[in-house]
Image (cartoon, rainbow, N blue to C red):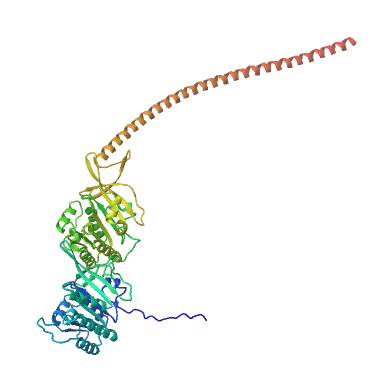
Length: 590
């Protein structure tokens, strides 16, 4: 008899959302509910803040939580929480219960120690409050009281078994210390005994320090295990991951993406070259060497958006606000009025003053505060070329977050040297970050360096592939069609000279045409005169012919008439003779 297949019911994994969008993403929806979760990190890595932030989110979702600190007083914990947006208003005593069990530094341990007291305390508090989530902050301080390694293993196992039996979710924070062999062993034991492990760390690059997070263990669930950057903000710990994870709820005033609409570029001649302007929600990269008018084009775009009723965040890495205002005003793009009205905001960023992930979050926060529908980042190469390990991830996070908000983005990129377009595309990662790529360059000819603009790429838009000369005047930017002569693109005075030469040659050709036309007209007039004279002669000959014909016809007619008369006369005469003969006969007869 065939064996019947056996089916086993597998309980669906229950997760606990942390409220930290990036963390929930890399853990596949959240941390395991009803399990023990360890948060390791050095001093100041953000372990306590991360745990409290998760507790605060669960409390806001209607759960009750217990926080037990082995290193801080309850008052200091509450003060720390008040510094963040999720703890500023405080919590009701029955929602978040904060207990302190500090271990005195001069404590002398005599005899064996176990976790029974802690477990009894947790049981009493959770039964009385109905709490479902517990945080044990700095548990390694308590574990250090145990004399033997075997005791640590036994008591941790006692604690984790009790937690699972109660269905509680427990967060344990501990130092990832390498001070001595015993400390390393303690961390290994805690890692082994828990179901999920988060590791917080700090990475220094130059003068900047990046905070990082890694999920090194998650039993029974797929997760993203690579190191990701985190930033400590007023909102607590924020995880920055490549691809971006903006909140589903947009900030008030944030526009929805409308790919069928376009924004003006601010340069009248450029709009038709891009099918009417930049698509709403698209990303455009302006790349070029220093002085090729990238910032000027960005200023033109900013003012065009403002004049159309939009709001623009201008992120400047190279210049402070005063310099930027001065430089843009000198070429006809004054920021004074939009800055005063609040429709334009300049965010000064420093490429050396922080990490790329911190800049990305500041920009997103500023966009939400302003309700901006357009962002200029000048230059984005300050982020991508910073040398920080998370520069690309931060830019990806930023751009995706802005796209999710429907924001149109204009990026400038500073390029050095004579790199080819392929090299520039590789450096800037064009295929990923930009829908439109406008390349600005110099063309040297005849002792001059003139600016030129080329649209290298424009997704979903018909666009020109021709080079345009870019001219900066006191009233702004002008684009002029390229002038090609003998296969070369001429700009500046070389173009003017060639145009003048062509105009002269055209004038000479026109004069030659006029001369030839006059000669032809004279020849035609001469021929027409000769034709007219011949016509008169023909008419004379025709009249002579008519006279000749008339004379001939008259002579013939007279001859015929005379002949007819003679014939008639002859006939008349014969008849008369016949009569006389008859009369003569009659007389003789008588």
